[in-house]
Length: 487
Image 1: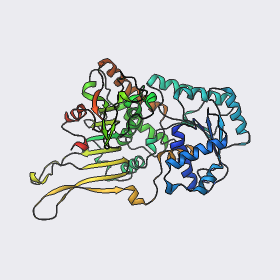
Image 2: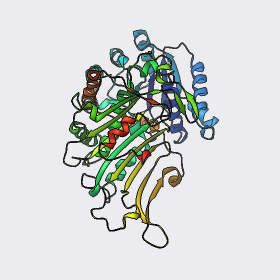
Image 3: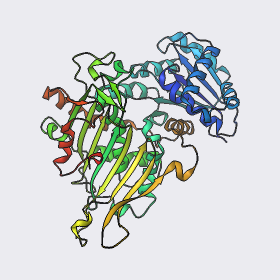
């Protein structure tokens, strides 16, 4: 049976940017590349008073803009649209749920997925409305889009409200980074290759760097971004998830709870960062006017919907440490920011030097082996080794063994949401956060937020188009190291 057979997928917030830019295009690709299944439906829900034809027109314009022209097939698109419907529904209005119940009248028993692409404050009321109108069945699943709260207490309140309606096995807390092809390859790299596991510990790894950089600023999202900032928006979710996959112990199998149990252990082993050590362990910055990719851009305080006295951070660098047997003494450096020189997500594992150098010092043999895992924009893996330069004498240089996914596999890479939606429909929770995992991440982040408030210092300024505040270089330099772009 095709993964897309016999299900109903209902989007709350179906006219929003995420649904039109990512979610519906992902489903189009899944349909186009499938086996032309029948018997499934997609329903868009939003407050906008649109007819079905209005919505399909809006959806078509958006998808033609966001899907490459070479991948857009008019025949496949028209067939896909036959499965798409729309209702004007306010998630806080009981009358809307009555109309939704009527829509389900002829569904029968099938998988039913509610995707909540709305403000998190609506998650509880929407779930309560679904339950009150008898729309929650044993085969129902609910997808919760980030951010889930602004601290541990608010996240727990949301989880409590949703958890009173749905069992934990029915709740899919989505983080689109976990759907990226290269993140999947982290599992394959670590646990499918015997050469890495003996080296994946404090004895062989000197340091780990995780970077997620963006060229864009807040754009049209100032009203959302300013109450959040980079720590909540990126570190609490994406970056900690990457750290967990990198650092976790081998699970007994690839089942959802086996993997998530090991990730939870990493989060619980993170050394706390508090007011006592926050200046030595963290840097927060905010971009000023500058130029990115040769184009002048305004500073954060000049962006739309940003208060002129905002102290929200657009850049964060953190030295994280894991207090367990495998990683004791190995620093994990995290950094993320907006208006940086390059759009890039990358993991760098720097290995230790050889125990005894036998090559002449002039050979640059001081350069350690390095594993670079690139998540975006061009997904791939590079392993840097020292090799001899052809010719006379023993002169060596770092050379990369380069695995470029696009070049190697010669077919379109799945988008992250495409994979994650398929996993939801199949009921596979491996790539989604469990409730205790989310709480553990917030418990580590909350003291950092509290420490910054206690410092009562503004974020350090950095010019748009640079790699962040100078203090971020000083942070890693204290360990005698440098960020990869600066070496």
